[in-house]
Amino acid sequence: MKRVVTSLRETLSVTALEARAVLLVALVFSVGTAATFLETESDLHAHATATRIDEMLDSLKRLDNDTGGRLGTNQHNAESTWATPSKSSATILPRRPINLNTASLAELDALPGVGPATAQAIVAARARSRFTSADDLLDIRGIGEKKFARIRPYVTAP
Image (cartoon, rainbow, N blue to C red):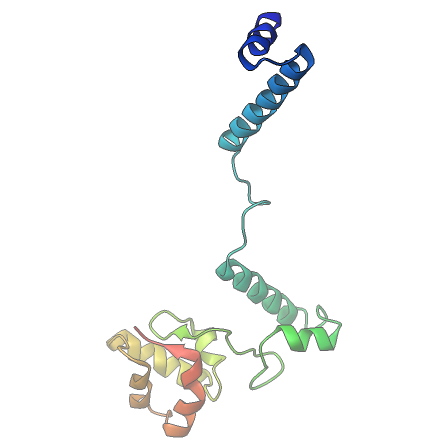
C-alpha cells in the first residue's frame, strides 16, 4: 500500500494525503463499475413495460369482477382508471383491440353487442377460415353494420 501511495505521490506530484484520496476515489470507482457488471436484474427492479402494466391492470379488473366489485371501494378512482363497463357492470371493454384469430370465447363475449351465441359463431367462423380483416365479421350471422360499428374499435385481425 505504501509503495502505491509513494508511486502516486511521485507521478502526480502531490502530498501523501492527496495520493491516498486519489487512490480511494479510484478504488470506489472500480468497485462500483465492477458491481454494475456483476449485478443481476431481479424482478423487483425490472422496468415495467406498458404491456406489463396493462397485464397488471387487467388482473386487477378480473379480481374486482371475481369479488363482486368489493375490491375498488373508491368509485371515483375506479371509474377514472378502468375502461368503461359495457353490457353490465361485470363486463369491461378491452383497453386495446383483441385479435379475432386468438381471442378467447370470454373476450369475444365481452364485446359490445356480442353475446354467447355470437361469440360462438365467431369462434366457429375462424375455425373454418382465419380472419384477414375485422370486416370479415360482417359475414357472421347476427352481426350487421350497426353492431359491427360498435365492435370495430375493439377488434383487429392481421
